[in-house]
Amino acid sequence: MTRRDPSDERSGETATLLVTCPDRTGLVAALAQTLYGHGANILDADQHTDPVAGQFFQRIRFETAGLHTDRLTLERAIAEVAERLSMRWRLTYAGATKRVAIFVSRYDHCLVDLLLRHRAGEIECEIAWVASNHDTLQPLVEQFGVAFHHILVTAQTKAEAEAAQLALIERSRIDLVVLARYMQILSPGFLEQCAADVINIHHSFLPAFVGGKPYRRAYERGVKLIGATAHYATADLDEGPIIEQDVMRCSHRDHVADLMRKGRDLEKLVLARAVRWHLQDRVLICGNKTVVFD
Image 1 (spheres, rainbow, N blue to C red):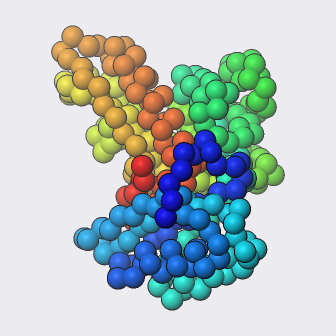
Image 2: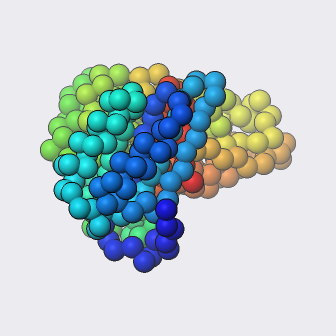
């Protein structure tokens, strides 16, 4: 296996294979031999074994320029190995740009951070559009050349609003929805029908302070650390698999406004990391946990 500087790789000529399966001997060799047999040059590989769950996880990134078979033939070969070893697998190609939609309400700090990072090339994707239940952020979003959709959400219009959002996601072929402080609870029906993965940022160090007003509750509890958590959204509120977390110290001198100010800095960083890692195919889900490869 050779290792190269990513800057030397030709654009669109790499692929990433993610694998999850019951742990057993020979897994690494089986995958490496399959890729080598089709002319793939492995650039880097990382694996993890969970001895409690008895599960094996691997991420392999390889060059496709030297393949002496076509992609379909390679995928069939991987599928054969996966069936034999009870593997779940996902193969993505570097040339396939993922399409992202961002949901936001009134708070703009996470949204602006993502838009700036995207413009700077730190987050590789296409931001297709931003949707909000308020129209106040439309001028800001349009300054970045991104489409904006105002979809009003009330108790009476929630089902209609979610149907409109789902239609947009399907029509736009969205791969990832990012809830950048979207202050609405997505229904289980929405999450079940949504074809895209959904990442949410929660303004506390989960599992502490699930639900609303976590900074107020943290202040009342007198905590000495506040945090932020990026996780996949599921039907269980704030209970989805955690991708990234971080914390910051606070003290008895901090009031709610101070905690909110400190917390917003964390929210931006934690959400950006989670989105980047997801887009780079570094995250594998195991039950209600994740494996995040460096």
